[in-house]
Image (cartoon, rainbow, N blue to C red; front, side, top):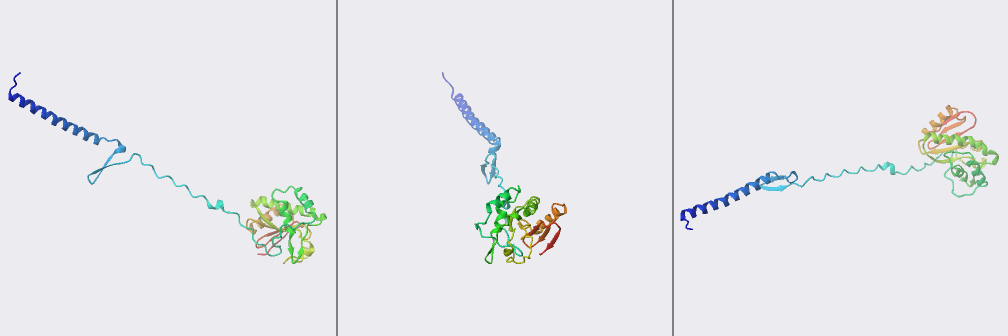
Length: 240
């Protein structure tokens, strides 16, 4: 089949135009795709460069709050208790009738005061004179005072630090600075108490107990402790 030269030239022109048109169309489609990228691949133009943003950046974790250091603090140590009381007694010194006295204390059903807390002050030694447990005939006399101290501990909602003084034998009492002859400690009716709170707070709470008729006795305020006794009538003093 004979085809004229002019016809061949027209066909070649149309073919070349189709190729160019297809290339332009492809470029146009690619441009549209760039304009409709997903949000997490949104392009940011900076100085002629295209930077793709990361999808859903992870937020900074919330910092853990610092634990309250007050909860980790140990309870304060017991203060020294001067004036009409004794230093810490030596530990482990055996006492006559100790087991029997312990059984008596346990029979009282105290909620907060332990037998050891009550017994330990009787191990004291002052100027070579050793204290003793009270005579058996005086054991019952301590019961009312112990019950006041136990109720005081309940009202304060504060632990007892220590009992610095309970019964004192007359010879031992004579060695205690500030102690008077005939002290209610020698009658087994008195306690000197240090609580884990201010002595003033313990003193005021003891006064309230007495106003309520819980007991009749003496209440003394000292710089680091309070004195309690159940003498049968009210007596109040402050030595601060």
